[in-house]
Every structure is written in structure tokens, then in C-alpha cells.
Image 1: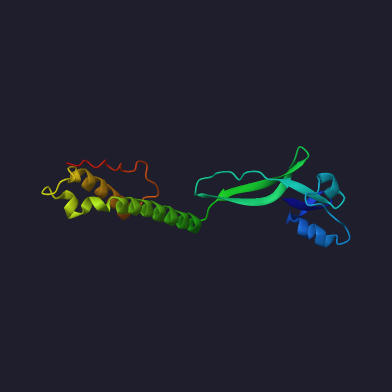
Image 2: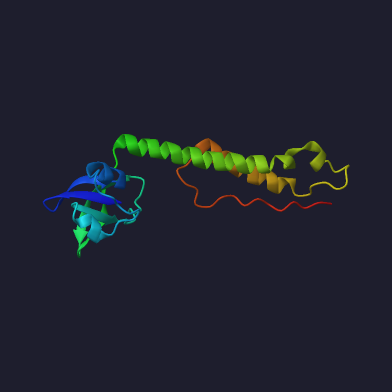
Length: 161
């Protein structure tokens, strides 16, 4: 990542090597120019800096790089999310939780087959009630679609006789 400076302040960011080459058509640049090579062209290397991890009620936006201890680094601004952004993010979170619960239901669909529970057949499932409880808890999650699930229902082990 690069930035183009003007009188010591960031004028263009992000600034690419393609832009640098276009701005200086009669200069040959290496694939990875050094800070010293770039300095003659008022261009600096911007060190990547991880964006902060914030709750969904906040928004992280990349802003103009800052100069710290002689090094330009990527900079982030954290602001409160708008009501619409929060609502959109909550909708996505609820949909993801519901999708997870539906997938878990699908994985246990086999336990509902009559032939699996029929005691006239050997083997047959002996703890069908445990699967009923498990599936009921999953259906409740699908219906209520909470933002998160602190404790997912645990699928019982199939017991056969």
C-alpha cells in the first residue's frame, strides 16, 4: 500500500504503483520499490494495520494513514452504526442462526423415519424421544431466530436395539 504526499500530508490514498508509473512515465521502477526510491516522488509505503474488531453496533472505516514514529500506517475510524445498518446486520445474524438450526434439523431427519423407530424391526432406535427433544429445541431456534445462540442443543447419540 502506498500514499502520495503533498507538502508532507497525504494527498492521495490509496496510491498504487500503477498510478506512480503513470504519473512518472519516464521513470523505471522496480516491482517493490524501497521507501528511499519512493521518497523522491513524494510517495510513501503505508504499513497495513489490522482493523479493530468491534460489535455489530459499530462500523469500522479506513481513513487517511497516520505517521507514527517515522512510519506511515493504515488507520481506522470506529463510529456508531446507523439504525438501518444495525437492523441489516441483525437480520443477517438471525438468518445465519436459523440456517444453522435448519441444517442441524436436516442432519437428524433420519431419526423421524417410521422404519427407524418401529420396534418390530431390528435394529431400531431406542432413544427416539431424545431426538424429539433435540429437534424440538432446534425448531424453536428456527422460529424465534435469535441473534446468537449461547448453547446449541446437543445431538443425542443413536441407541439401537
